Image (cartoon, rainbow, N blue to C red):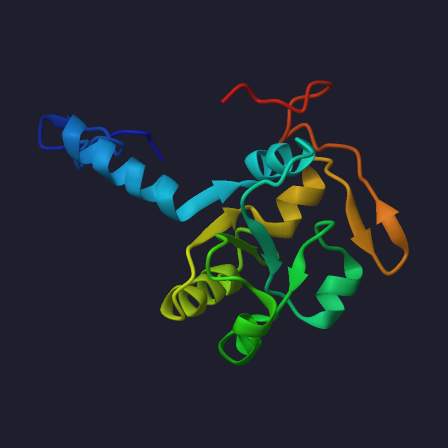
Length: 164
């Protein structure tokens, strides 16, 4: 299939079939997106800085998934248990960064919604545990502390810093 489609004598680029938003609208959208999301590299950098990062990381997956691997220092609270247990485990004055398996799972979004409805400031960590491991960051499992080599499709070889 061609990257463009012809309609009569007019060629329509599928990327521009719907025009880009006005710059001010785009800025508002991306500013809002960054208020709701963060990524694994930024979380890892904040945690590695050594000082209090100013947030707590919450793993919203099952106990089986937690045992397979989780971010060191994360709080474990499966999504379904958030309403009944969040206030026992989390301080409402401290923002929460929540994650689940990866981009194909919306468990973190459901947990973030539940936390927000309880009055917590919350961000979803895009990429989830999958990208944490794929980018080569250390994690803990029932076997102990582990680390995989960074996948060059998710993190630049050698630097670990994509420059963004």
